[in-house]
Each structure stands twice: as C-alpha cells, then as structure tokens.
Amino acid sequence: MCRNESTISMLFTMLLAQALMGAVALWGLALWPLPVAEGADGFVTRGWVWPVWEVSHWIILQGVASVLGVFLITKAYQLGDASFVSVFEYSVIIVGPAFAWMAFGQSLDGLQMAGIAIIVVAGGTLAVRGG
Image (cartoon, rainbow, N blue to C red; front, top):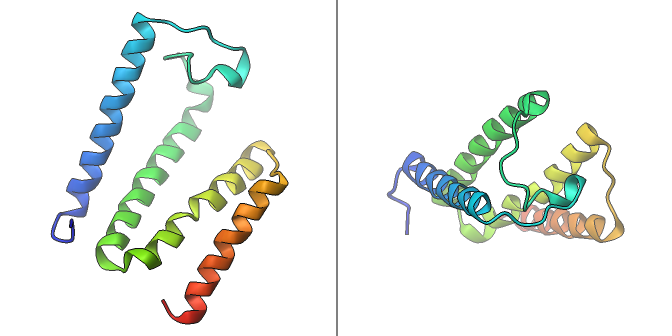
C-alpha cells in the first residue's frame, strides 16, 4: 500500500506518532501517579526521571541506531517481498539480547535461545530456497 510513499515520510510519521503516545503517557503519569516498584521493576510507572547524563551516550546510540534500523526495514518492505523481509525484521530479537549481553552482562534463558534458534532456522530456510 505504501510502495509510492517516501520512506522518510513514513519514518517521520511513525516516530511522530510514537512521540505523541509517549508524551500522553508521561502526561497521564504526571496527573495520576501510580505506585512505583524499586529498581528496574518500576520503569513503566516511574514517569520522567532526570538527569540521565550517566547513560546519555547509550540513549543517543540507541536512538540513532533505532531510527536507522526502522528506516532500512521500511525501505526493505517497500522494495522486497513482505514474507521474505518479515523474517529479517525479527533479527531485532537476536540483536537486542546480544547487545544486552555485551553491554550489560545479561544472560539468556532456554526459551529465549529457542526463539532465536527458530528465527535463525527460518532465515536459513529462506536463504536456501532462494527467497
């Protein structure tokens, strides 16, 4: 449906929609605060927290990489067959945990490893059959 749309315009529209939803959620949390659990467990209900200078380099890296990745996957959907491209979109499920392991030392459980294996097999199957 969006083959003739500009990739930049679709990317901008999606990011604008996400920014608006985030702003509404933060506004709602400011007006109606919820109980916040300690540590990482409370990140959803915590609302806006400042300063974040000690992790700003990670935030900037994640932002730039995410925008570039979404741009590229949008372009791939415009140029390629959706059934082929969609498998590779799921590579985020592999790259995300790999980055968390490298940057933060987080480990994977068996279910996560099984999911990664299924994605790798699906991508390999598409590569072998020629798309």
